[in-house]
Length: 190
Image (cartoon, rainbow, N blue to C red; front, side, top):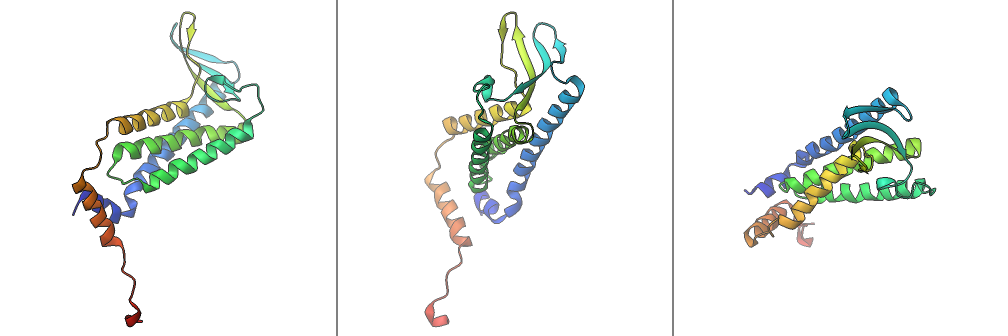
């Protein structure tokens, strides 16, 4: 029996990826809570002088502060909710044997949900990781943004470098699905 057939028969094989999503959300929310309590508005901690600072920042817009002056809270909430549904849909329909894609989807769901929680609760996202060198400053970001970036990078690697399924793998997957499908009863047996 192929590994795909085994993973199809085991409905709990995807649960570990939902745990990854939950851990990403928990880490994001914990770090934002800590930064809010420890630093409050405008506070900062120098981690590496002239390179890395933990700096409390509120971002009402999207990535890199874009749309920060517009009143787009509920539009961003709606987009985030749709994005989570799409990611979770693909997570539930991706074969567990495709681990790289499963990891990417789990991380994307966790990161999107982490920022969504802030938007609904606060109307803005708390950012605090700031890297800079002299006059160059990378936009301030958070753990959820990091998790989204890692998830998107893993997905790009999967899409760019994954080999197409071989005819043998396709026929094994079809055989596994056929083994699960229950034949309907004929009219004579009714």
